[in-house]
Length: 396
Image 1 (spheres, one colour):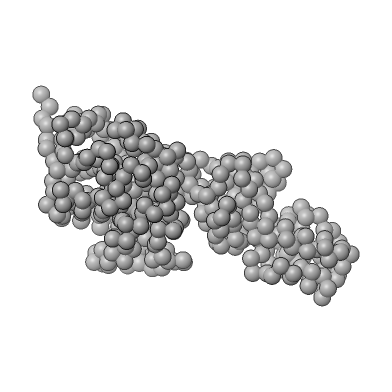
Image 2 (cartoon, one colour):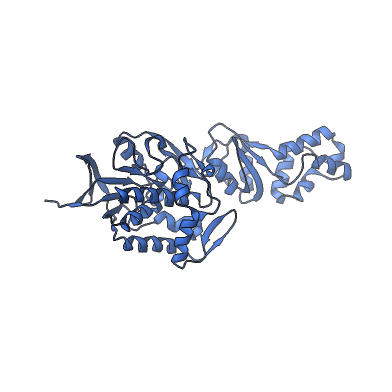
Protein backbone atom coordinates (compact mmCIF):
# COMPACT_ATOMS: atom_id res chain seq x y z
CA UNK A 1 0.00 0.00 0.00
CA UNK A 2 1.34 3.44 -0.98
CA UNK A 3 2.11 5.69 1.98
CA UNK A 4 0.38 9.07 2.06
CA UNK A 5 2.71 11.85 3.26
CA UNK A 6 1.28 15.04 4.73
CA UNK A 7 2.63 18.54 4.01
CA UNK A 8 1.55 22.12 4.64
CA UNK A 9 1.76 22.92 0.93
CA UNK A 10 2.50 21.18 -2.34
CA UNK A 11 4.00 23.32 -5.13
CA UNK A 12 3.82 22.08 -8.70
CA UNK A 13 6.68 23.47 -10.79
CA UNK A 14 10.30 24.11 -9.76
CA UNK A 15 10.86 27.16 -11.94
CA UNK A 16 11.48 30.70 -10.72
CA UNK A 17 8.02 31.27 -9.19
CA UNK A 18 7.71 27.83 -7.62
CA UNK A 19 11.17 28.01 -6.08
CA UNK A 20 10.50 31.46 -4.62
CA UNK A 21 7.19 30.32 -3.17
CA UNK A 22 8.79 27.19 -1.70
CA UNK A 23 11.70 28.96 -0.02
CA UNK A 24 9.42 31.71 1.33
CA UNK A 25 6.96 29.29 2.95
CA UNK A 26 9.67 26.83 4.00
CA UNK A 27 11.76 29.44 5.80
CA UNK A 28 8.66 30.44 7.74
CA UNK A 29 8.23 26.97 9.19
CA UNK A 30 5.91 25.34 6.67
CA UNK A 31 6.53 21.81 5.46
CA UNK A 32 6.83 22.16 1.69
CA UNK A 33 6.92 19.62 -1.14
CA UNK A 34 8.15 21.04 -4.45
CA UNK A 35 7.44 18.83 -7.47
CA UNK A 36 8.69 18.96 -11.07
CA UNK A 37 8.73 16.45 -13.92
CA UNK A 38 12.17 17.74 -15.00
CA UNK A 39 15.35 16.15 -13.73
CA UNK A 40 16.66 19.45 -12.33
CA UNK A 41 15.28 22.69 -10.89
CA UNK A 42 15.23 26.01 -12.73
CA UNK A 43 15.82 24.72 -16.27
CA UNK A 44 14.45 27.87 -17.94
CA UNK A 45 16.51 30.03 -15.59
CA UNK A 46 19.68 28.35 -16.85
CA UNK A 47 19.07 29.30 -20.51
CA UNK A 48 17.82 32.82 -19.82
CA UNK A 49 19.78 35.94 -20.73
CA UNK A 50 22.21 34.00 -22.90
CA UNK A 51 23.13 31.88 -19.89
CA UNK A 52 23.68 34.87 -17.61
CA UNK A 53 20.07 35.27 -16.38
CA UNK A 54 18.48 38.69 -16.70
CA UNK A 55 17.14 38.19 -13.18
CA UNK A 56 15.21 41.46 -12.69
CA UNK A 57 14.71 44.99 -13.97
CA UNK A 58 15.25 48.15 -11.92
CA UNK A 59 12.36 49.88 -13.73
CA UNK A 60 9.75 47.31 -12.74
CA UNK A 61 6.25 48.80 -12.57
CA UNK A 62 2.78 47.39 -13.20
CA UNK A 63 2.40 49.33 -16.47
CA UNK A 64 5.13 47.14 -17.98
CA UNK A 65 2.97 44.05 -17.77
CA UNK A 66 0.09 42.86 -19.96
CA UNK A 67 -3.04 41.42 -18.37
CA UNK A 68 -6.80 41.54 -18.80
CA UNK A 69 -6.62 43.37 -15.45
CA UNK A 70 -3.72 45.83 -15.76
CA UNK A 71 -3.88 46.62 -12.02
CA UNK A 72 -3.60 43.03 -10.80
CA UNK A 73 0.20 42.90 -10.60
CA UNK A 74 0.54 46.10 -8.53
CA UNK A 75 0.13 44.48 -5.12
CA UNK A 76 2.70 41.70 -5.46
CA UNK A 77 5.22 43.86 -7.35
CA UNK A 78 4.85 46.60 -4.74
CA UNK A 79 5.49 44.25 -1.82
CA UNK A 80 8.42 42.32 -3.30
CA UNK A 81 10.48 44.66 -5.46
CA UNK A 82 13.44 44.37 -7.78
CA UNK A 83 15.55 45.79 -4.95
CA UNK A 84 14.40 42.98 -2.67
CA UNK A 85 15.60 40.30 -5.07
CA UNK A 86 18.79 42.24 -5.77
CA UNK A 87 19.49 42.27 -2.01
CA UNK A 88 19.17 38.47 -2.03
CA UNK A 89 21.58 38.23 -4.98
CA UNK A 90 24.11 40.41 -3.17
CA UNK A 91 23.71 38.46 0.06
CA UNK A 92 24.88 35.40 -1.88
CA UNK A 93 27.89 37.31 -3.21
CA UNK A 94 26.79 37.10 -6.84
CA UNK A 95 28.41 39.77 -9.01
CA UNK A 96 26.02 41.53 -11.37
CA UNK A 97 25.83 44.35 -13.89
CA UNK A 98 23.20 46.55 -15.49
CA UNK A 99 23.23 46.00 -19.23
CA UNK A 100 20.71 48.52 -20.65
CA UNK A 101 17.30 49.87 -19.68
CA UNK A 102 17.49 48.62 -16.09
CA UNK A 103 18.22 45.01 -17.05
CA UNK A 104 20.33 43.22 -14.43
CA UNK A 105 22.47 40.19 -15.35
CA UNK A 106 24.90 37.94 -13.51
CA UNK A 107 28.52 38.68 -14.33
CA UNK A 108 29.09 34.94 -14.24
CA UNK A 109 26.39 32.40 -14.94
CA UNK A 110 22.66 31.76 -14.52
CA UNK A 111 23.78 28.70 -12.53
CA UNK A 112 24.48 31.13 -9.67
CA UNK A 113 20.79 32.12 -9.48
CA UNK A 114 19.70 28.47 -9.47
CA UNK A 115 22.27 27.72 -6.74
CA UNK A 116 20.95 30.69 -4.74
CA UNK A 117 17.40 29.35 -4.95
CA UNK A 118 18.50 25.81 -4.07
CA UNK A 119 20.42 27.11 -1.05
CA UNK A 120 17.44 29.17 0.15
CA UNK A 121 15.15 26.14 -0.28
CA UNK A 122 17.62 24.06 1.75
CA UNK A 123 17.48 26.69 4.49
CA UNK A 124 13.72 26.23 4.55
CA UNK A 125 13.99 22.42 4.57
CA UNK A 126 11.99 22.25 1.33
CA UNK A 127 11.58 18.71 0.03
CA UNK A 128 12.10 18.57 -3.75
CA UNK A 129 10.81 15.70 -5.90
CA UNK A 130 12.24 15.76 -9.44
CA UNK A 131 12.01 13.63 -12.56
CA UNK A 132 8.61 12.17 -11.81
CA UNK A 133 5.36 12.99 -13.63
CA UNK A 134 2.34 14.24 -11.74
CA UNK A 135 -0.14 11.41 -12.24
CA UNK A 136 -3.19 12.78 -10.43
CA UNK A 137 -4.42 15.81 -8.49
CA UNK A 138 -7.58 15.64 -6.38
CA UNK A 139 -9.30 17.86 -3.80
CA UNK A 140 -11.60 16.61 -1.04
CA UNK A 141 -12.36 17.47 2.58
CA UNK A 142 -10.25 20.62 2.47
CA UNK A 143 -7.08 18.85 1.34
CA UNK A 144 -5.28 18.43 -1.97
CA UNK A 145 -4.01 14.99 -2.90
CA UNK A 146 -1.22 14.72 -5.46
CA UNK A 147 0.14 11.46 -6.84
CA UNK A 148 3.74 11.86 -7.97
CA UNK A 149 5.39 8.81 -9.46
CA UNK A 150 4.72 6.02 -7.00
CA UNK A 151 3.90 8.15 -3.97
CA UNK A 152 1.00 10.28 -2.79
CA UNK A 153 1.22 13.59 -0.93
CA UNK A 154 -1.54 15.60 0.70
CA UNK A 155 -1.75 19.21 1.92
CA UNK A 156 -4.30 21.95 2.63
CA UNK A 157 -2.59 24.20 0.04
CA UNK A 158 -1.67 23.57 -3.59
CA UNK A 159 0.30 25.99 -5.79
CA UNK A 160 0.18 25.92 -9.59
CA UNK A 161 3.59 27.13 -10.77
CA UNK A 162 4.11 25.04 -13.89
CA UNK A 163 4.32 28.02 -16.27
CA UNK A 164 2.98 28.17 -19.81
CA UNK A 165 3.65 26.25 -23.02
CA UNK A 166 6.48 28.50 -24.28
CA UNK A 167 9.73 26.65 -25.13
CA UNK A 168 8.14 23.15 -25.30
CA UNK A 169 11.56 21.62 -26.01
CA UNK A 170 12.30 22.36 -22.34
CA UNK A 171 9.29 20.28 -21.35
CA UNK A 172 6.81 23.18 -21.09
CA UNK A 173 3.13 22.26 -21.47
CA UNK A 174 -0.34 23.67 -20.84
CA UNK A 175 -0.68 21.55 -17.67
CA UNK A 176 -1.39 24.64 -15.54
CA UNK A 177 -4.45 25.52 -17.61
CA UNK A 178 -5.82 21.97 -17.56
CA UNK A 179 -5.48 21.90 -13.79
CA UNK A 180 -7.05 25.35 -13.40
CA UNK A 181 -10.04 24.35 -15.52
CA UNK A 182 -10.41 21.16 -13.49
CA UNK A 183 -10.97 23.36 -10.42
CA UNK A 184 -13.36 25.66 -12.29
CA UNK A 185 -10.99 28.57 -12.93
CA UNK A 186 -11.30 30.55 -16.17
CA UNK A 187 -8.31 30.74 -18.51
CA UNK A 188 -7.53 33.67 -20.82
CA UNK A 189 -6.58 32.21 -24.22
CA UNK A 190 -2.81 31.58 -24.13
CA UNK A 191 -0.67 32.87 -27.00
CA UNK A 192 3.05 33.22 -27.72
CA UNK A 193 4.63 36.45 -26.44
CA UNK A 194 8.09 37.97 -26.79
CA UNK A 195 8.26 36.02 -30.03
CA UNK A 196 9.65 36.66 -33.55
CA UNK A 197 7.10 37.62 -36.23
CA UNK A 198 6.90 35.96 -39.64
CA UNK A 199 6.41 37.67 -43.00
CA UNK A 200 4.73 36.27 -46.10
CA UNK A 201 3.41 37.34 -49.48
CA UNK A 202 4.93 40.46 -50.95
CA UNK A 203 7.00 41.03 -47.80
CA UNK A 204 9.03 37.84 -48.13
CA UNK A 205 11.68 39.84 -49.99
CA UNK A 206 12.74 41.30 -46.63
CA UNK A 207 13.87 37.81 -45.61
CA UNK A 208 16.83 38.35 -47.95
CA UNK A 209 18.07 40.81 -45.31
CA UNK A 210 18.52 37.97 -42.80
CA UNK A 211 21.12 39.00 -40.22
CA UNK A 212 20.73 42.76 -40.78
CA UNK A 213 19.84 44.76 -37.65
CA UNK A 214 19.09 48.43 -36.94
CA UNK A 215 17.90 50.52 -34.02
CA UNK A 216 14.28 51.46 -34.70
CA UNK A 217 11.03 52.38 -33.01
CA UNK A 218 8.58 49.50 -33.44
CA UNK A 219 4.85 50.00 -32.89
CA UNK A 220 1.87 47.68 -32.45
CA UNK A 221 -1.44 49.13 -31.32
CA UNK A 222 -0.64 51.81 -28.75
CA UNK A 223 2.63 50.18 -27.69
CA UNK A 224 5.98 51.31 -29.04
CA UNK A 225 9.55 50.41 -28.20
CA UNK A 226 12.91 51.79 -29.27
CA UNK A 227 15.45 49.00 -29.53
CA UNK A 228 17.12 46.90 -32.21
CA UNK A 229 15.10 45.11 -34.87
CA UNK A 230 16.60 42.14 -36.69
CA UNK A 231 15.62 40.71 -40.05
CA UNK A 232 15.58 36.88 -40.12
CA UNK A 233 15.09 34.20 -42.77
CA UNK A 234 11.47 34.00 -41.56
CA UNK A 235 10.66 37.64 -40.85
CA UNK A 236 11.34 40.03 -37.99
CA UNK A 237 12.99 39.61 -34.60
CA UNK A 238 15.27 41.52 -32.21
CA UNK A 239 14.32 43.21 -28.93
CA UNK A 240 12.02 45.86 -30.47
CA UNK A 241 10.03 43.23 -32.36
CA UNK A 242 9.85 40.81 -29.42
CA UNK A 243 8.47 43.65 -27.30
CA UNK A 244 5.69 44.63 -29.72
CA UNK A 245 4.86 40.98 -30.47
CA UNK A 246 3.15 40.76 -27.07
CA UNK A 247 0.76 43.51 -28.16
CA UNK A 248 0.35 42.41 -31.78
CA UNK A 249 -2.82 40.69 -32.94
CA UNK A 250 -3.16 38.62 -36.10
CA UNK A 251 -4.14 40.71 -39.10
CA UNK A 252 -2.87 43.97 -37.61
CA UNK A 253 0.16 45.86 -38.96
CA UNK A 254 3.43 46.52 -37.14
CA UNK A 255 4.86 49.99 -37.75
CA UNK A 256 8.62 50.59 -37.93
CA UNK A 257 10.32 53.99 -37.75
CA UNK A 258 13.65 53.22 -39.37
CA UNK A 259 15.07 56.70 -38.66
CA UNK A 260 13.74 57.71 -35.21
CA UNK A 261 16.36 60.44 -34.71
CA UNK A 262 15.45 62.39 -37.86
CA UNK A 263 12.79 65.14 -37.94
CA UNK A 264 9.86 64.85 -40.39
CA UNK A 265 11.29 67.33 -42.95
CA UNK A 266 14.79 65.88 -43.02
CA UNK A 267 14.68 64.31 -46.47
CA UNK A 268 13.26 67.41 -48.18
CA UNK A 269 16.05 69.40 -46.51
CA UNK A 270 18.63 66.96 -47.95
CA UNK A 271 17.07 67.35 -51.41
CA UNK A 272 17.36 71.14 -51.25
CA UNK A 273 20.90 71.07 -49.86
CA UNK A 274 22.17 68.30 -52.15
CA UNK A 275 19.79 67.86 -55.09
CA UNK A 276 22.11 65.34 -56.75
CA UNK A 277 21.98 63.00 -53.73
CA UNK A 278 20.31 59.61 -54.22
CA UNK A 279 17.88 58.03 -51.76
CA UNK A 280 19.82 54.77 -51.37
CA UNK A 281 23.10 56.59 -50.63
CA UNK A 282 21.34 59.01 -48.28
CA UNK A 283 19.76 56.16 -46.32
CA UNK A 284 23.13 54.40 -46.31
CA UNK A 285 24.45 57.22 -44.09
CA UNK A 286 22.02 56.11 -41.38
CA UNK A 287 21.28 52.41 -41.99
CA UNK A 288 23.12 49.23 -42.99
CA UNK A 289 23.75 49.29 -46.75
CA UNK A 290 21.64 46.24 -47.59
CA UNK A 291 18.68 47.64 -45.67
CA UNK A 292 19.11 51.10 -47.19
CA UNK A 293 19.14 49.64 -50.70
CA UNK A 294 16.05 47.49 -50.10
CA UNK A 295 14.02 50.33 -48.59
CA UNK A 296 15.00 52.75 -51.35
CA UNK A 297 14.09 50.18 -53.99
CA UNK A 298 10.67 49.57 -52.41
CA UNK A 299 9.92 53.28 -52.14
CA UNK A 300 10.68 53.73 -55.81
CA UNK A 301 12.40 57.12 -55.83
CA UNK A 302 15.09 56.53 -58.42
CA UNK A 303 17.94 58.75 -59.45
CA UNK A 304 18.70 62.13 -57.90
CA UNK A 305 16.41 63.53 -55.21
CA UNK A 306 16.34 66.86 -57.04
CA UNK A 307 14.39 65.27 -59.90
CA UNK A 308 11.45 64.54 -57.59
CA UNK A 309 8.87 66.90 -56.09
CA UNK A 310 9.01 67.94 -52.43
CA UNK A 311 5.69 66.13 -51.99
CA UNK A 312 7.12 62.82 -53.27
CA UNK A 313 10.26 63.18 -51.15
CA UNK A 314 8.23 64.05 -48.04
CA UNK A 315 6.01 61.02 -48.67
CA UNK A 316 9.13 58.82 -48.82
CA UNK A 317 10.30 60.19 -45.46
CA UNK A 318 6.85 59.58 -43.97
CA UNK A 319 6.92 55.97 -45.19
CA UNK A 320 10.34 55.44 -43.61
CA UNK A 321 9.00 56.84 -40.32
CA UNK A 322 6.04 54.44 -40.26
CA UNK A 323 6.83 51.49 -42.50
CA UNK A 324 3.96 49.04 -42.25
CA UNK A 325 4.59 45.32 -42.12
CA UNK A 326 1.66 42.91 -41.84
CA UNK A 327 3.03 39.72 -40.26
CA UNK A 328 1.27 36.51 -41.21
CA UNK A 329 1.99 34.99 -37.82
CA UNK A 330 4.64 34.32 -35.19
CA UNK A 331 7.26 31.62 -34.75
CA UNK A 332 4.97 30.14 -32.09
CA UNK A 333 5.50 28.77 -28.60
CA UNK A 334 8.71 27.03 -29.73
CA UNK A 335 10.44 30.42 -30.07
CA UNK A 336 8.38 32.46 -27.58
CA UNK A 337 10.20 33.53 -24.44
CA UNK A 338 6.95 33.61 -22.47
CA UNK A 339 3.22 32.98 -22.76
CA UNK A 340 0.62 35.76 -22.73
CA UNK A 341 -2.78 34.89 -21.28
CA UNK A 342 -3.22 32.12 -18.75
CA UNK A 343 -5.20 31.64 -15.55
CA UNK A 344 -7.57 34.60 -15.28
CA UNK A 345 -6.63 37.20 -12.67
CA UNK A 346 -10.36 37.63 -11.99
CA UNK A 347 -10.18 34.23 -10.29
CA UNK A 348 -7.33 35.20 -7.95
CA UNK A 349 -6.60 37.49 -5.03
CA UNK A 350 -3.96 40.04 -6.05
CA UNK A 351 -2.74 40.06 -2.42
CA UNK A 352 -2.23 36.31 -1.95
CA UNK A 353 -2.56 34.71 -5.43
CA UNK A 354 -5.17 32.37 -3.92
CA UNK A 355 -8.20 31.33 -5.96
CA UNK A 356 -11.24 33.21 -4.70
CA UNK A 357 -13.63 30.27 -5.05
CA UNK A 358 -11.25 27.40 -4.25
CA UNK A 359 -9.65 27.80 -0.80
CA UNK A 360 -6.03 26.70 -0.60
CA UNK A 361 -5.45 26.76 -4.37
CA UNK A 362 -2.84 29.28 -5.61
CA UNK A 363 -1.50 30.20 -9.05
CA UNK A 364 1.74 32.12 -9.64
CA UNK A 365 4.28 33.12 -12.27
CA UNK A 366 3.82 32.55 -15.99
CA UNK A 367 0.77 30.32 -15.40
CA UNK A 368 -1.19 33.49 -14.58
CA UNK A 369 -2.47 36.08 -17.09
CA UNK A 370 0.36 38.52 -16.32
CA UNK A 371 3.11 38.96 -18.92
CA UNK A 372 6.03 41.34 -18.61
CA UNK A 373 8.14 43.21 -21.11
CA UNK A 374 11.44 41.80 -22.29
CA UNK A 375 14.34 42.50 -19.94
CA UNK A 376 13.90 40.79 -16.56
CA UNK A 377 10.29 41.78 -15.93
CA UNK A 378 8.93 38.24 -16.11
CA UNK A 379 11.47 37.03 -13.59
CA UNK A 380 10.46 39.84 -11.25
CA UNK A 381 6.81 38.78 -11.60
CA UNK A 382 7.86 35.21 -10.75
CA UNK A 383 9.72 36.36 -7.63
CA UNK A 384 6.94 38.72 -6.52
CA UNK A 385 3.99 36.40 -7.12
CA UNK A 386 5.86 33.44 -5.61
CA UNK A 387 6.73 35.49 -2.54
CA UNK A 388 3.12 36.71 -2.16
CA UNK A 389 1.76 33.16 -2.25
CA UNK A 390 4.51 31.85 0.05
CA UNK A 391 3.79 34.55 2.63
CA UNK A 392 0.06 33.84 2.48
CA UNK A 393 0.62 30.10 2.96
CA UNK A 394 2.96 30.82 5.91
CA UNK A 395 0.30 32.96 7.57
CA UNK A 396 -2.47 30.37 7.28
